Amino acid sequence: MSNLSSTFAALGDATRFAIVEKLLQEGELPAGELRTVGQISAPAISRHLKVLRKAGVVEQRIDAQRRLYSVRPEAVQAIGSWSMSYREFWQKSLDRLEMALNQEMRKK
Amino acid sequence: MSNLSSTFAALGDATRFAIVEKLLQEGELPAGELRTVGQISAPAISRHLKVLRKAGVVEQRIDAQRRLYSVRPEAVQAIGSWSMSYREFWQKSLDRLEMALNQEMRKK
DNA sequence: CTTTTGTTTAACTATTATGTTAATTAACAT
DNA sequence: ATGTTAATTAACATAATAGTTAAACAAAAG
Image 1 (cartoon, rainbow over the protein chains, first blue to last red):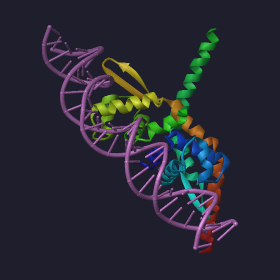
Image 2 (image 1 turned 135 degrees about the vertical axis):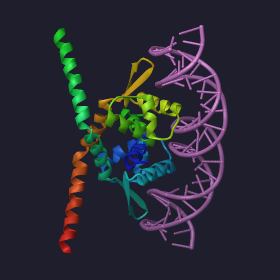
Image 3 (image 1 turned 90 degrees about the vertical axis):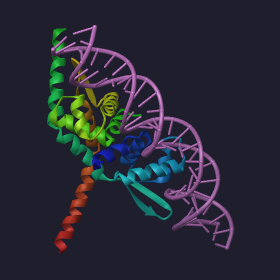
Image 4 (image 1 turned 90 degrees about the horizontal axis):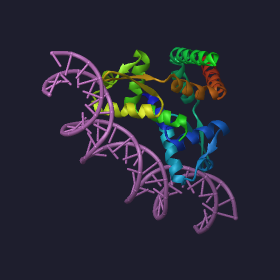
């Protein structure tokens, strides 16, 4: 599986996506804090974090008995790079769509 | 599940990711042409296309008995927008990383 | 040294996803 | 009408995923 596809797979679960969003918004957090993303058990969160880590989406730092997680910037950037590498395609298509919509507006 | 998370889920399968990449590179293609992304049966491809369509990643156009598929530009753009909405975060982090590496180089 | 706090691993279960072959549908060509 | 081409749906088997509770582990605090 391509590296990027595993990244997508990791983010393709609603709970994991919520975890990543929370880490992006609040920065590094201990595993326990991440339970608030839903009504879910600690072991479940722990396993999701393992999946995210294996996919290179988050990294772990140890602080006493706590495990602090944060998003790996490379992962988010890689996703952006992929989208941008097809920018010409989607930009063009969306421009055409917008023009068509403006045409419609002028008719009324 | 958030809309974006379903998009990621759709792209999180290696076969589907390959289908999307092929469509991005070659443009609109009939279902049959997409079998070349791997040694896979026609029904399997058909089901993958259904998943991609449900997630809004591809769209279908009918031409006689063929079904022509293409990537929906909005989907690829939405992914880019998500990454870019956190650009400050990853740009900063990566800049810091690069600076640290340059420091290392100067030491040698 | 015992307890508490934070987290992970183990064992198990239920649900979902993916792939296969066979059958079906749809349009075109003879 | 009949056969051919293109693709999907049906039926089924198997594998992977995600959740649970209970147990284990590690460091900190009492």
